[in-house]
Image (cartoon, rainbow, N blue to C red):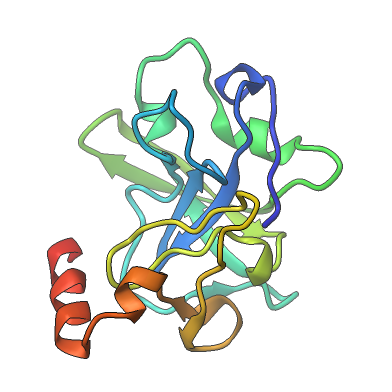
Length: 177
């Protein structure tokens, strides 16, 4: 899992990583801690997530419209996109050069920037398809096994859901849809 920190993201106090949950792109912490209420820090394509197929760049990398719920909240830090674009040594996202108007309940109309994901699928934090839990890079934690798909279309299952019957797993999934 590729994790990073930035003084522009929670003042660099916590590492962060990208996760993909279906068509939702998320900024999460790579492991739980006692300070944050949730591991999810931001939904990066808040107004633009859709069940449609992934859009691909010429370099065969996934793209999405960056319209984060983080930037719509009044907070002392701002411009999450700029923070993610300047991560060293490897920025997890890159601008494609395209923009489009987005409208959301919070924050109204604004320009969304299309970004290309520059990390590989195996560098993302895995999300359980059924219950939505995030895997962890904590020492000794088991990574979530792939249940189907290839590359950025893969889906994963946590150990708890894998041990359930198919009916029980689907019941977990229906709670989050």
